[in-house]
Length: 148
Length: 209
Ligand SMILES: Nc1nc2c(ncn2[C@@H]2O[C@H](COP(=O)(O)OP(=O)(O)O)[C@@H](O)[C@H]2O)c(=O)[nH]1
Ligand SMILES: [Mg+2]
Image (cartoon, rainbow over all chains, first blue to last red; front, top):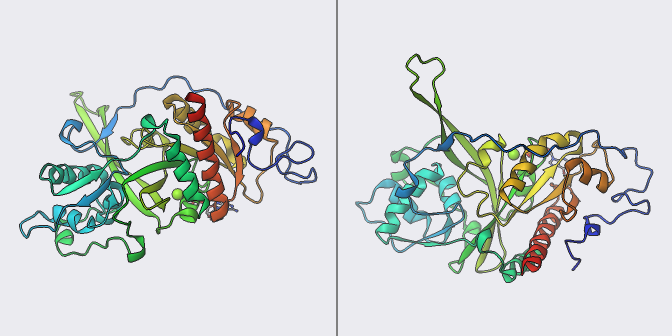
């Protein structure tokens, strides 16, 4: 495996003239890039927040937390709760639940918070970047991608 | 996307995953990668080309609170905005699932979507050399938040081709940020792009250790 911190590993192998994958006769070749990015100035605080309730009322669920039902919905369960329990008989991410139920993630999260409190579903936490120095996880992803 | 009424939810009208889209019961954890870039650079195309499921759309509702300018009393006004996101999925093993989020619309919303970037392993910034500047803002935001990213040049037929070092200078990228070419329509090319990101993240993890 090439060492990705080596700048020479830039994707497509360089052509003989040091251009990326070019043979030097490409009509599209342009040595100069006409624009240049300026580093951003510190951003203004944007006064936006997510609609439903305050965060302390919701379980800390990620978009890719996997939800699995512990059992079937009871006949008296709320429709949203029953829908979640039916959909998550096999593991399903919060994002997929939101997509299939056509409900915003924050609304699904509220439903899940109640279901978790009642022990009707389990949540399988995602592996997030802050917890990352785990190289074996990245190796597992690479191995999986290679098989595609 | 319309809100489903409780009626729809009760009547069982919700279609869940197709048979072939069901995850095995052994799926124990998931990771996510975000694909960003300006409008029309190929984000949805890339998600669709590598995803094992038909891409889905999730949404979040945000409110903007501001002092009403037209309001003599200076009271708070709120404007609700729905932000939608396409995503796909790749099962990398029986236990581990990779989700790919392709972020449409205005980038300032992406970073306010709780947890979208914080937990992501990293990001792919898709660029179109005909309009490089549409990706400047998002690159800055990724840098500010310390989200590792690679650049993937989506090669449109009439887009200019620049030497990589000229692109690196124009984008003001650190030396170690990988730049690759891709064709977002091709599964293999999208897969290679994700591999480049994973190798880069791996190298960062090794360097940190
Ligand atoms: N030639 C070419 N066309 C592409 C490529 N990727 C995307 N497109 C086309 O560009 C258009 C915009 O792509 P889309 O994925 O919707 O962009 P998004 O707005 O970033 O999600 C679509 O018509 C795609 O078919 C590519 O790699 N090469
Ligand atoms: Mg799109």
